[in-house]
Image: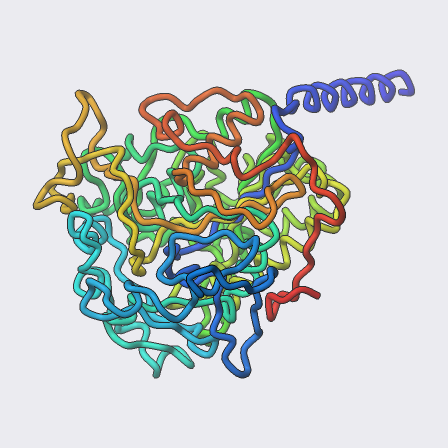
Amino acid sequence: MKSASILNIAVLAAGICSTISAQSTKSPIRHVVVIFQENVSFDHYFATYPWAANAPGEPPFNPRSDLIFSQQGALRLRGTPSVNGLSTDGVTGVLLTNNPNSVAPFRLSRAEAVTCDQDHDYTDEQKAFNGGLMNKFVEETGSSDPHCEPNVLKSVTDRGPSQVMGYYDGNSVTALWNYAQHYAMSDNSYSTGFGPSTPGAINLISGNTHGATLVKNPDESDIAGGSVINDGRPAFDDCVPSSTTTISMTGTNVGDLLNAASVTWGWFQGGFKPQTVTADGTAVCSAAHAGLPGEKKLDYIPHHEPFQYYLQTANPHHVAPTSVGMIGRTDQANHQYDMSDWWNALNAGNLPAVSYLKAPGYQDGHPGYSDPIDEQTFIVGVVNALMQRPSWNDTAIVILYDDSDGWYDHVMPPIVSPSATSADALSGTGVCGGTLASGAFQGRCGYGPRQPLLVISPWARENYVDHSITDQSSVLRFIEDNWNLGRIGNQSFDAIAGSLWPMFDFDTPRLGNTTLILDPSTGQQR
């Protein structure tokens, strides 16, 4: 018995050593935590950065540098880099006062955190961009959602289609602005393609929405040219309603690459743990919460879980990991977990090398059932916890979004992947972009709308704005490069994705305290 125990310990130790060896990295980053939120364009959150209105009763935001005046008398900030926004001083600016859209952009106060969901369909987003004129947002993506009326949601702000031109500043998205002041952000990062949540989530993990098949209750509008363009639900998930269209994906995702290299990883999503399991083993995901909108929303939203579209990385019955020690490693959970599993792993010192975090519905920032204030609570809670762990020194947090929700943004993206299906409309009926390369996959027109992307790390450049072009698959490329995983192949966007490397400085460690502990409610420094 004793010799058997010694043998078991030796085998376990050898496995751990093998895993550690396999997880050697190109940079000092040993842990990547991707916080993947919902439905924000860059201008919607950063239109006037770093200038906030500082209205009475709202958490004030003041840029960290001193005010100075240029020789021309214009107000400037010493040391705060400018962004490609709507205004350089928070008040004036051509796009604030003389906008090509039928309604000018307007500030949303913190009291207006609850808004309606806008139209972010693949086709309608292209129409809003209008060949690069960026002037049809009110007509094409502005929405009056009948579900989002004042008698349904409390404190809702609904100006009809004009709502799409609204933006927040540092008095509402205070934490994100503070993170931008102390770490790195991009003002030139895009959704890999046009459209809603499902394409964005799949591009995050595979860089390729092609290879889609309608499985149940087929809705042909969910696929164009063999690529996912709308929100069909994952085929390998018990918690998808039986009447819903489901889609399966073929091909490789980052989970396959990480498994092949023995790198620990997981997707962690609020509400993934079943509340009940039926007699035949079917999971029922019924956990729900009400945030500021006031109406309960299911915590688990299946089409926000991209790995459930792929048979090889799915956990259809939402089975729990066999132990905390196995979180991140291959067992019956197959790397798909509840958010509570991530917290258990973090507290046990067993953080996987790569963690994808998806907030429960009420905290994911999605208009109509979530909001920037509830979103901030989730983000700050995660970031604060990571900063207070020993692993912080080798951690990088990446915050980005699945789609723009159709919110106004003034920047036309570069079209690196044209398409010509009946769903395309950017350059005319049935056309998005220029001439397709021979054999190029259809239904993947992109890049799509511009979105926020932030990197928080002891190795992130401080108070830095990256202007190089990146997209959702740039996160995939960073993980591939850092762990030497190779590329997805099969026309994945990872092959052409811009690098996140410029947002880091791996040659010069930051001096002094690299943490920034914020108040989850106000977003201000504690």
